[in-house]
Amino acid sequence: MASVSLHVPVAIILLAGGFVSCFFGYRLLRVLLAVYGFVGGIVLAVQFGGELEFWATVLLTICAGLAGAALAIVAYLAGVALLGAAAGALAINAFWTSETSEPGLWVLLGVCLAGALAALIVRRYVIIIGTSFTGSWAALVGGLALAGNSAAAAVTNGDVRQMYPLAPVDMQLGFAVAWFVLAAVALVVQFRSRHKRI
Image (cartoon, rainbow, N blue to C red; front, side):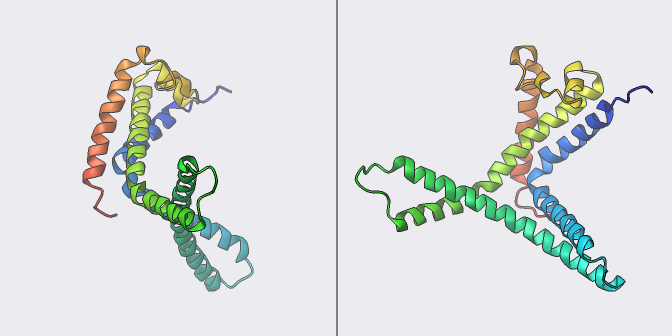
C-alpha cells in the first residue's frame, strides 16, 4: 500500500490557522479557552453521568460544560497572575542589596502583588505579539508548502529545522522579511482591533 502524504492537509491547516491566529489571535484566545473548557467539562460529565436519567444527564452535561469553560478562563488568569508574582519574587531576590537581612514579608507580598497585577495588565500585549509572529510564520510555511517549497514541505512533515529562524537566514532572507512584514501588519491589525470584543 502506498504511503499517504499528509503535507497538503497540514499545509492547508497551517495556512488557514496561521492567518486566523495572526490577525485574530488575542480576540479568539478567550473563545478557544472557553470552548476547550466546555468540551473538557462535557467529557467529565459523560464519564460520571452514565447512571442518570436522560434529562438529568443532559442537564449535568450542560452545567459541567459551562463550569469547565469558566474554570479554563479562571485557570488561565490565575496562571498569568502566578507567573507575574513569581517574576516579582525573583526580581526582589535579584535586586535586594542588603547582605545582613532578607526582604520583609510585606515587601515581598507587595512586590509579588505588583508583579501579578503587571502580568495581568500586559498579558494582552504578550498574546498579541506572540500570536502575530507565530501565526504569520505558520501561514507563510503553509502557503509555501502548498506552492511546492521543499523546506516548507519538510516542516509540514515535522522537520521544523528547515525554516528560519531555526535554519540560517542567508538561505531564507525572503522568508524572514516576509515573516516580519506579515507579523508587523498583524500586530497593527490586532492592536487596532483589541478593544472590540467577540
